[in-house]
Image 1 (cartoon, rainbow, N blue to C red):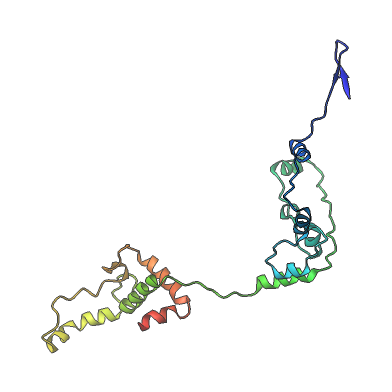
Image 2: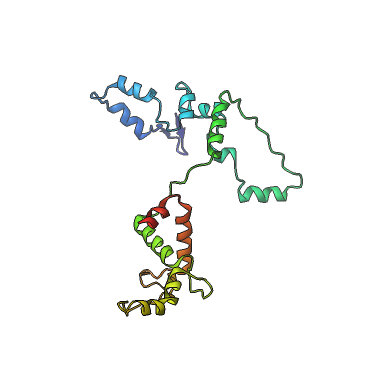
Length: 222
């Protein structure tokens, strides 16, 4: 093909091929096994979901397989969000825009979608566990202060009971240590609270520890 310019000169136009195609034409890998590569291409992909893997058909495309199982291949196309330009265009138009209803393809393997939906709705066990050092620290606070997260005068804790009966214990035994720490401090004011966590932070962590079955009892027994 060619074109003629103003000076009646014919200019021949040559269609340029892509660089990738040129490279493929000029090179040939003798070391590669074409038969093995073909088997590898036809091999099923690594599917971690057992329901999809069982119903997968190797001779069909990914989109066709997903449609037959009743699943969405592209969520952006299935649940398309209108752009700002489209919304403004709809507002300017007097007549309402009638959207075309596209019938979804028949799902021959609809049981796959039903199984996945039932599995998603099924309750799951919580495998959450706090680090042993943190659980030991929180168990120590519970053992020492009970539920006294901050300084509460009306709440009677084991530490406060010991503080109140301190004079009686000193009279009964003369060998009682004179250096008696103040047991009226709450969890947030404990001298071992090196990170200066607030009482709300400690309360939140203790609630998490109490929700984990068995972990708090292990450290309280120790």
